[in-house]
Image (cartoon, rainbow, N blue to C red):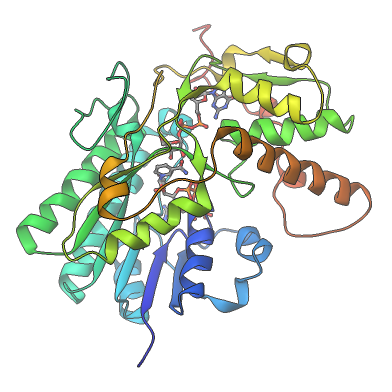
Length: 352
Ligand code: NAP
Ligand code: G4F
């Protein structure tokens, strides 16, 4: 029997890399789209030691022809549409780009599926950001959406267009409404990895302080390697549907920082400063998911919870910086990333 074929858009991202590893483990032939940047960005695939096992196809979400080409070349049974401009903060700086890439990009992928092979099963990376500001205590599939950023508005469009292609063209298309999921492969702009990397550097004397924005925001943080499994499970069901994927716990950014400093035996308050440059024009204050449907329908449940997640991330960043100081060289993002304090953006400065 020939093996299943999957196309992962955004294979160079956190979820793309973990999903590729998961699908390879299941015996899939894995193809991934990536952007032709002036400097290639494959460190996650190299870090997981799977770079040689996936086939790469250049494609950009603003270019419909390149997406058609990716589907034509890979002839997939399943498409996992993960590519997006995924940093909420950046969507305030580049709101039109958010709509083009994160919103309309979904339609370009769906159109390519419809035109080339409507039997392809498609996963759309929807998000808990759809619920937005001022929502209910727990959020499930029926909770109303109130997007609070250009990113979330674009994702809301992606959510609905996915349902429209499912109902209108009978395409097996699912929305995974995934709550925040983190890992040592998380991008450095996101608060969890910013903290784990910052704490590691402070513990080793490479930095003296950490600057953060809204410490009161609460998130339902899970572990990314577990979350990618739920994507695959959605596409193995008899019928397409939408599912919330979450841990059911919520913690503040402050708690995350506190716990991360505890891992290295330091007091978070001595090193953490609030910097209004990292406050957003609008922020989501509370996310906490109810994943009963995924638990019962997919048999999926989270195992790694908050305390363990923080420790995994801090330990990994600490180990990386220690190895780096000893002269070891390996694929990794942090040494090349400038301090965020060097980035100028009016969006975040409130002195306007
Ligand atoms: P990520 O690490 O930021 O990865 C995003 C991927 O999209 C990267 O491979 C990136 O390529 C690619 N990309 C960006 N713009 C593109 C464009 N114009 N054309 C083609 N590719 C483009 O994000 P992630 O955390 O893995 O998240 C995966 C998906 O799940 C995203 O859609 C995100 O919005 C969604 N999501 C994430 C979470 C979470 O907590 N992680 C929760 C809910 C939903 P480069 O490497 O070239 O930048
Ligand atoms: O880590 P964040 O940037 O993630 P955010 O905005 O929740 O978005 C992530 O999760 C979504 C799922 O809910 C995904 F759809 C999305 O693609 C992305 O993966 O920020 C988390 C919270 C925010 O309230 C932010 O204001 O942390 C707060 N925060 C406080 N200080 C900070 C900082 N966020 C960042 N990035 N940097 C700070 O210094």
